[in-house]
Each structure stands twice: as structure tokens, then as C-alpha cells.
Image 1 (cartoon, helix red, strand yellow):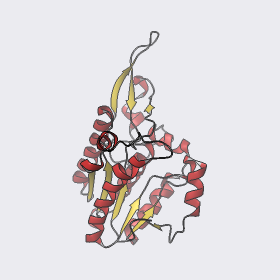
Image 2 (tube, rainbow, N blue to C red):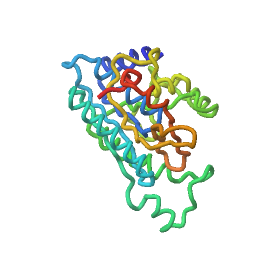
Image 3 (spheres, rainbow, N blue to C red):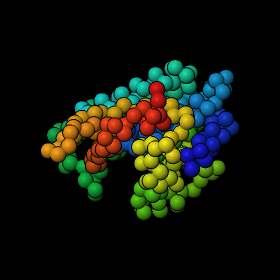
Image 4 (tube, rainbow, N blue to C red):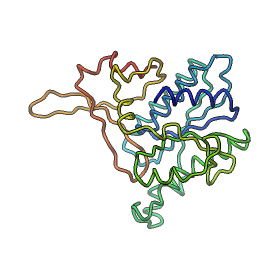
Length: 263
């Protein structure tokens, strides 16, 4: 399945001249998508790597320091990888306007905390900063393709929504940005496939993964076992539950077992 996704992306890279935008949150789906994008860019002959690619990530300014540092570290690794291999990829960390920030709305305007029926934070703190940059880039480019890490298997509602969208050559128009076309390269991947990519085994390791997400290591200790490293990562959408990925014990986290992620 991964090879099919890469082959489709590679064909799109070579046959469609429109620049790419890549949504990145630091969660497992968008991290895998970013890795696939880098793999594809690396597979293109150096003389043909002309397509501008912009990775877009929003700092909601309410993340815990460990998560903020992890995301910033990963974006920095993307920049270094792009510079080293001349991939023409830039990584952007966006922030909401002060007047649209979390605490201005909570304390200054009296908004309630975001909830299922009033998710005011997503639009103001994540979508609007991205849209502003996209409109700026598209004004220069003309049109662009936005790759997102959405998957049908995330929920039945997501599956129905994605199935109902009208497409043209695998792409659909962005509902708010008329000159932007949306691509969902990992739409049909299962949760098992995503977790296998995040925790590679000899059977799932790809030979040419391009950059290493920056994990945050803390101690996990109990009365009966010695301290073991735990890798912390998170989907950074405000109001969503944070999650930790507990890795195998340190003895299993050898370079060989994680060679699918390299600088």
C-alpha cells in the first residue's frame, strides 16, 4: 500500500506542475504523510526537483512545552533535510493573530472552552492562519495542491464525508480556497498501517525514509521495572485529547529497528 501511495504521488509530482502544500500537525497521520512526501521528493532526479513544496503547521500557542518542542524540532529536521538534498521544501510554523488567540477569546471575550457543539478554536487558531498563507502563496503561484492526512478509517462520519466529495482526477476543490485542490494520499490506509509506520518493524521499514521526527523522551517508571524511554507525540489540534506513544523497551529501539526514519 505504501508503495502504491508513493507511486501515485510521484506520478503527480512529475505530471502536474502545480506547487504542493502539505498539512502537518505533529500527529501520526500527518507525520506519515510528510514522510511520504519527502520520500517522493528524494526519488525524483535532482535536475527535476523544481516543484515548490510548503509544509504548513500551526502553533495554537496553548500546547504544552514538550509538544511544542517536538513539533519545532521536527520542522527543523525537515528544513535541514530539504537543504541537504536540495528538495525545494520549506517548513512553516504559523501562529494565530493575537486577537484570535485562545486566552484573548476565553478571558477577553468570555468565550466558553471549546466543546463538541462550539469548536470556535479550530477555525480561528488553526485554519485561518493556514488559509492566510495559502492565499498569499496561491496569489503568486496561480493554483496549488494541498495534501492532507485525512483517512476514511478515522470514523464512520469521516468515511461518509470523504466518500461524498466530488473529485476530478483524484483531487477535489477546496471549499474555501477556489484555486486550491485537495489531495488525500493516505485516505484508504488502515489504523494498523499507520501505527506500523510509526513503529517500524523489519517487515514495514521502507528503504528510503527521509527525515526523523523529533521525539520528546521522558521517564516511565514503576516499582517493578526500571525506567524506560517513552516517546511523546501528539495531534496538535486545540481541544483534542493528547496521546502518548509508548515505545518498546530501550533494548528494542536500536538503530536497525528505526532505520525507516533517518536524517
